[in-house]
Length: 472
Ligand code: URP
Ligand code: ZN
Ligand code: ZN
Image (cartoon, rainbow, N blue to C red; front, top):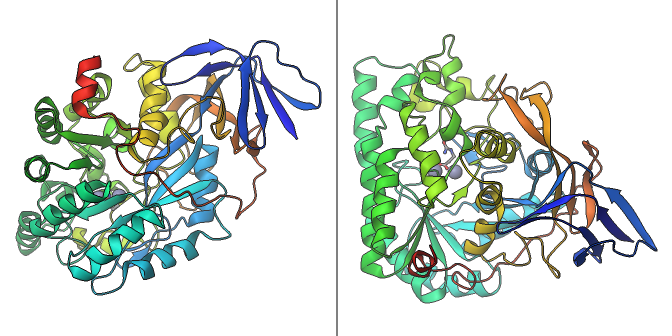
């Protein structure tokens, strides 16, 4: 059935205007004034913004990590995402050395099948580069539509790849049309600092932050940028947490390199002092990279505003406090790294960003949706409100005030790192390809209705850094 959204204010990365939206066959069919309502279900969006659905470029659902498995799977994780105004996620598919990439991809398809309530895609982790991997990559791109590869520069003896692997991945990505993503921290030095801290009897959560100083994120970010320049390739730095990393990304972009940066809500509003909370509560705030001293937050906000950083990911990687985070009692290095963020990513950016005047409304849409769609080959199917685009839409009340809490969130975990935080603005209804997933703040979607999305190659819609600088 046709649907018409009336009386709302449409907001894209470029424009803000009042118009009606006609939805037909899951797509936006018409945008205009006083559209013909006959045969259509009318949805009143009075007093609300209508945004393109959020795209979360960084999730870890149902992922084995830190001696356990992340608590939110593709069902609870995508339901929570939808409540928060996200209609597409790109999840990280882990690979194992010596195993065909296709086997890992099948594993990830099976995790999502029958569960996802919104659309999803995968990035592929590259843990080694050899003839077998190189032979498989074209198929990964052409047949699976996986056009982004992830290399970890940290987590020694777990996920960490060496610089040769990163460099060869950058070369392959350049040739094949993919974007290389890095977790940029110097894993070798961190490994030494962790051993040293434990030998000295330092076991509390705060030592997680103290053994991963921002200099080591800046160093790894700079190294990845240099290798990108040498390979003449393209790089996306995930979860940027500190001024040192922003500086390296800005330096690379000023040289005209195709280097892009993502930050996450936790780095924008939480700080290192949370790791000192008593009764092991600090473990709830263990991420890698770690939360930083408060002054870094302003650097990150400014970088989003001036375009040195372009996107916001959740890095959703949730563990219960009880039984999972607790694995690290008596040894901070055993605390599973990560937290539940998928649901609050969009609201925090709106409330702390737009409402507090740090970014504009159109920048907000760009950062949480449009730019991500362009960088990761989803645009213009996703990430915008235009005739022919998927009707992935959020009807958002910008004035409602609420308090974030584990008591009311929809993630499957027993705490929320933003517990007690007041935010302004909330999705009222969320549509995925024209069908309600959230209607009047209630879940009405269906597990399994989310579709796997094959993505376009890098570069089709992402402007190069050079083009972008010309238009500023
Ligand atoms: O602490 C984090 N970030 N956990 C998720 C895995 C990763 O490094 O992205
Ligand atoms: Zn990471
Ligand atoms: Zn991550």
